[in-house]
Length: 108
Image (cartoon, rainbow, N blue to C red; front, side):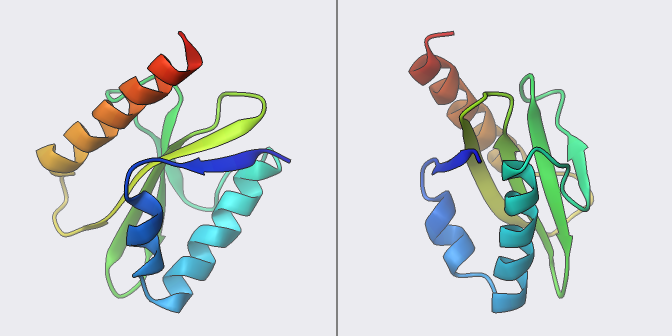
């Protein structure tokens, strides 16, 4: 099973979500750890190769972006509450920065 590595303040942000949202995120990350697709996701091609977004539809729209293309680890790049139809530039910039960190860590 792949390990999960949380970048930045992502883990702290997720801990502040309602319990039902945290459970849904945990369930979906468990699926990813086992090599399966999350329940509701989409590729984030414009951000970086292999970046995917888990979508949680509860009282708000929650998003968790990760990269799982490496054999031993899943990098959770960012999580946020989506308030509009378009992902904010601020959130995209955070994900791009953290994706670059992963590439640097991995020496790619």
